[in-house]
Image (cartoon, rainbow, N blue to C red; front, side, top):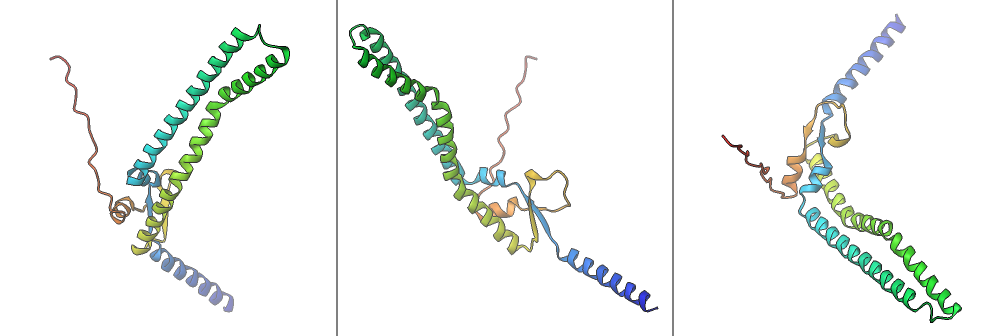
Amino acid sequence: MKKLFTVVAVGLSIFGFTNTSTAQTKIGYISIEELISVMPEAKSADSAIQDYQYSLQLQGNDYIQELNEKDSAFVKDSAKLSTATKELKRNDLLALYQKVSGWDKTMQQMIGEKQQTLIAPIQAKAIEAIRTVAKENGYTYVLDANTLIVSPTGDNLLPLVKKKLNIKDTPPTTKPAVRTGQ
């Protein structure tokens, strides 16, 4: 009898705790990627990254032009140069060639670093806004909608966070239907 009472007490306590904990759990979700894409800071960061990429491409073009000019000059003047001078010029050309051939990789790395530098504060602001909205609205869990395949039902917090960040909804732009000859 004592064992039965213990089992019933444990069962009721587990059932009771389960009901109270589920009643207090509020789940929401948000697409962080979508939130960041509509933030004004992200648009200016994207513009800055494009400008930076363009300037790096121009720099790469300058390297290619310099290599072509030095190579042409070397071919033209090589007969007049001493062996030691030829070797020095050849080494300079080789170093410049290596710089040009590795420029795409270097450029991509530099762009990635620039993106990280510009996007990190925007992500931090977005996460802080999500935390604030979750706290203000009593959400226990907020999940990133882009990483979930199956999840319990929840509320989309994107409109609330946009409101918190003073981001106005812009109506989606739809292309007019194209009519073919009738």
